[in-house]
Image 1: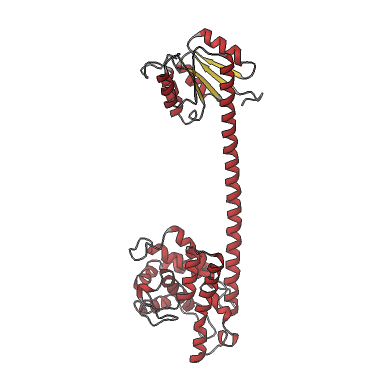
Image 2: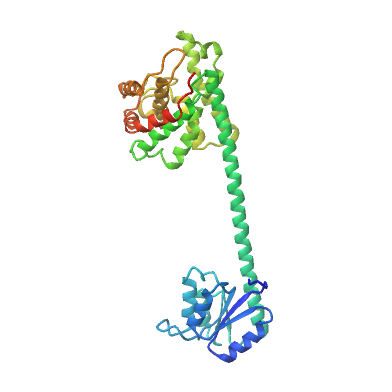
Length: 371
């Protein structure tokens, strides 16, 4: 629409009497632009503001070498160009030639009118096409607005979910008096390992970009089950008795059950919840089958838990605890290397060695404050 809110019509016809008649019929209702040949029609259609509707005579000459110098070629050109492809075209054809009507629709015309033209028919067809165009524009605007609302709502929900995940993870770590930045570090270690293994044939089925994002979000929940462990055991500075250690092992079960309960209440699961459940339940399993709670071995241990096992142990080694000092990066790397094939999946250990520089960067960026 132009500044006067009048629709712009482009009338392209090589017969002067037809141009005069159509212009006189339509100029009081619309802003009318005229073209007497194909090049002029194409030029005017490209001008801004572009027409809202094109009335195009099928016998229009002027496009040398294009399909017999006719309006069908103009129609085709308009539909091929991205700036004019959406313009509705009203094609005017000679009488008694239904084949031309069919061809016009095939070339992309929105409607076809046969000569001789009748004023009422032209006015009605023009008004209909303009109304359809306005309706399509309104729908497109509403769809865009809806997409923006959906994106905004999805972003808000994602932020809220992330906040809840972080609150739960922080609560578990606070009870255990873990290093303040432990969960920041382990989720980034897991991603670093996943990136190294993304094209590995043993891991690629699990490590799509989307799933790596889910692993990043799920990793902080690995020790959420510790909220169910009594303080006398969880905070004990010395070595645990066998009975106490059996109680400590249950944090994996508590974590799994909490997440499985969410899945049950929702009535469905997804990869994020699955990863969170696997990590919580199986991150203490060992590659040789000597871990807990199930004594799984090798590939029976979920990929997510194998990644977390290396990330969690590395961070525990380089962090100070009430029962030990912080080890150096080099010592931690060597201890994990020694555990390859026993405690840890050898391919995950190799990935850590490949990502060693990234591990050091993460540890430095999220180092704990000096006590």
